[in-house]
Each structure stands twice: as C-alpha cells, then as structure tokens.
Image 1 (cartoon, rainbow, N blue to C red):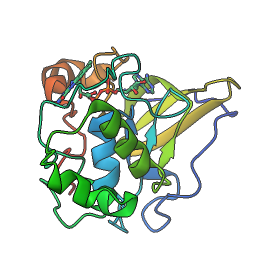
Image 2: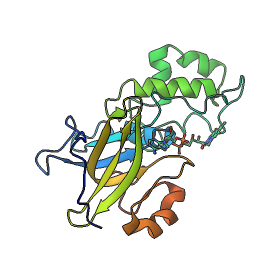
Image 3: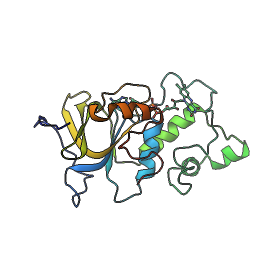
Image 4: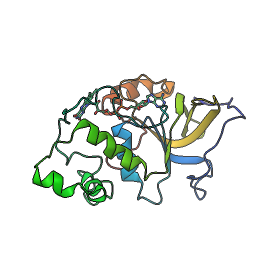
Length: 210
Ligand SMILES: Cc1cc2nc3c(=O)[nH]c(=O)nc-3n(C[C@H](O)[C@H](O)[C@H](O)COP(=O)(O)OP(=O)(O)OC[C@H]3O[C@@H](n4cnc5c(N)ncnc54)[C@H](O)[C@@H]3O)c2cc1C
C-alpha cells in the first residue's frame, strides 16, 4: 500500500534519527510502554547505532493501577526483571536498582526473591527515569506500511494538546497489551497471527535486536 496523504502538521522525530541512512526514518517505532516494550527500551538503550522511539498514550508509567494490592507479589522471581535473562550485565537490572536504592542487603537477608507489585512498579519507573527514548502522552491510532518506500508510517495525536505526530520506521514493535490497534492492511493476516508474541513480521525481535 502506498501512502500519499500525510499531514503537513505532523512532527518528525529529530533527536534519534540516523542521518547516514535516511534522515527521517528510524530503525524502529515501539507502540505502547508496558513491561514488554520497557524491556526492549532498556536493552536497546546501550546500542549506539540503533535508533528508535517508544510511544505511550498515558502521561507516565503505572503498572496496572488499582491492582497493586498490599502484599501481592509477582509470579516470577526477580531474575525475570526487565533485562537480566537477555543481558545480565545491563545497568537496568533489578539488582542494580537495589544497589542504587540501598536495598540489596535487605532483599538478600530476608530472602525476598519475589518482588511485591508495588516494588516492581517503582523499579520500572526507576528504569524509565534513565531513558530518553520514550514519548509519553502519545496515542498511536494508525500504523501503515508504505510499500514504495519500504517502511512503516505510524501516526497519532499527543494527548492533551491534540497535536498530530507521525514517524517513519523500518520496523514496528507492538506492545499494547490487550488493546486492539489498527494494523497495516498489507500485512494484517500475518500480523495478527504473530500478535500473541507481540512482534510483527517486520518488527524488531523483542529480545534479539538485529
Ligand atoms: C494484576 C496483574 C498482575 C500481573 N502479574 C504478572 C506477573 O506477576 N508476572 C507476569 O509475567 N505477568 C503478570 N501479569 C500479566 C501482564 O499482562 C504483564 O505483566 C504486563 O503488564 C504485560 O505487559 P505489556 O507491555 O505486554 O502490556 P501492558 O502492561 O498492558 O502495556 C501496554 C501499554 O500500551 C499502551 N497502549 C495501548 N494502546 C496504545 C496506543 N494506541 N498508543 C500508545 N500506547 C498504547 C497502554 O497504555 C499500556 O501502557 C499481570 C497482569 C495483571 C493485570
């Protein structure tokens, strides 16, 4: 499908484009910022030649607000944090969070290897505070594939101002949880079959950026 009518009002990303390849086409756009794409943001952060942005409709991160019930824990031990199983040396590990926050020995001595949901939420916010690739308040309402140019066009509006935005990217990563998203019609069939693992056919692998 060819895209011919893009709004002149649209913002183009400026800070993270790869001028050597194409000044206006990012390597990837990630839609939604729950734990799925936050993990990708942390893993992608140290890769200098990889340029992407993460678009989240909410104005900030809050993991399942209303469900952070006292004394409830994650179902997984802390090693299944945002990064450790893919990159144990990452600065975004839960262990580094504990070190920075002065909680390392408390966790060790009490043998608390299953985080409370509250702690997990704080840990995610701590990781986000170190990332510059996230645009909160950005609601994506369309993702299309431009066959002529060979890249995706992702568009939507800034929450609050209503300002339209548009990004071009070679790949998209969909991490919108259970919320439906309008998909590129050229790949819709395949796309939906892949959606259970959250990765489009043309998308960046979640834990294996190439
Ligand atoms: C109470 C509760 C406890 C859970 N506990 C665990 C657990 O212990 N272990 C476990 O493995 N799993 C658990 N889960 C499963 C849960 O689904 C995952 O933990 C996780 O939240 C899924 O992450 P996600 O990034 O895929 O989606 P989500 O967390 O749902 O994030 C999706 C994000 O995409 C954004 N978004 C959606 N559409 C758009 C759009 N059009 N434009 C921009 N942004 C958009 C949303 O605002 C949202 O922030 C739990 C779930 C619940 C409800």
